[in-house]
Figure 1 (cartoon, rainbow, N blue to C red):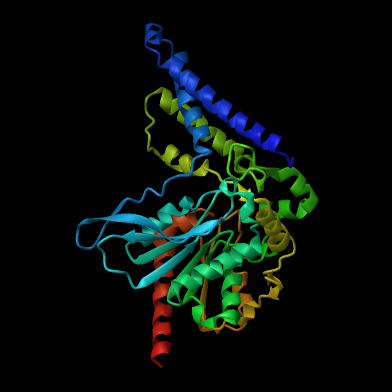
Figure 2: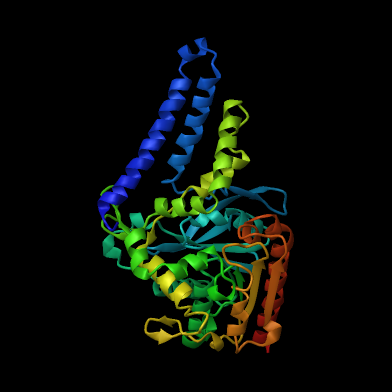
Length: 418
C-alpha cells in the first residue's frame, strides 16, 4: 500500500462521490423537474445534498468558529486565535479575548493527533473561556508538510510539548485529552529532570491510554493482534502529487475515517439515512445536530507514519510509559521524578476507547508525588467523547477540574511565598 497511486486513488474515489452528490442535487433542483411532482426527485436531491456535503468535509480543515464571547461586563468581545509558537508539525495557539483582563488561570489543552483536527476540542475551549486563558496545540495535516521538514514520532511529539510548556511557564495547568495523555505525562517527567522550574502547576489527564493493558478494549485488542509489519503494509501510504507533502509516508485520514466508521457502522448508517429523509422533507438545516457533528467528525487529517507506528509499538504494544521505560532523545524518562506537579485523572465508565483503569494508572507511576497531590474521577454515565466535550464534561467534570486547578494554583503561590 505504500505507493502514491493508492493515495491518489482514495482521493479520486472521494472526489467522485462528492461530484455525484453535487450532480444529483443539481438535477433534482432543475426548474423543469418541478413539472414532475415525483418523490423520487425529492429523495435524489436530498441524497445529493447529504452526500456532497459529507465528502467535501473530508478534505477541509474546520474553522474554530469561536468569533466572540460575552464577558462579565455584558459586552461581546472578539476572540482571536493567535499563534504563539509556530512549528512544522504543530503550533501553540492562544484564544485571546480582546478587551478582557487576563484571567489568572492559564490552561494548556493538549489535543490528540489521532485523525481529527484540534477543532474537535472546540466545545471544550468554549467551556473554559469564561474562566481561563486558554492555549491549545494545533497539529498540522501531514499531507501539507514537505518531506524536507523531517520525521515526527512520539519522541518529537513529546519534545514539542516540552517546548510549549516552557513557553507558557510554571503557572500553566495542562489538560491532556485522550491519545496525548501518556506523552504529556512523559513530557512533564522530562521537565522534572531537565528543567524543574518550567514544570506546569498541575496536570489533568482525560481518558488517555497510560496503561492500555489495564483494561482491554477493541482498540487494544487490534493493536495486539496485528504485527508492526502488517500495520505498515496495510495502513501506510505516500502522499500523492496534489499536496505539498508529496512523497511523505502517512496514515491517511481517509483510511482512518474508514476505520472510525466501521467501528459503529450501523449507527452511522442510520444517522445518514435519517438525515436524507429529513432533507427530503425539508426538515434539515445547515447547522442542525447531524451537520454540526459530522462536519467535525468527517474532517480528517493524515498522520505522519512514524508517529502512528511508534504510538502503536511503544505506547500500546510495549507499554513503555506504563512500564516507566519510555526514552526521549536517548534519555530514559522517569515518571517518578515528578514531585511537585499535581496530577488528576478523569475516566468515563462507558468509555469503549480508553476504558476505566487505563488512565488512572498514571497515579501509580507518580511514585515521587505525595497522595494529597493526586486525584481521580470516574464519571458514571459518560463515554469517551462525553468526558471532554459533552454534558458530563460541562455539568460535572469541568467544575471539578477548575476546583483542582485552583487548589494547586494556591499551593504553588504559597510555596513561592515561603
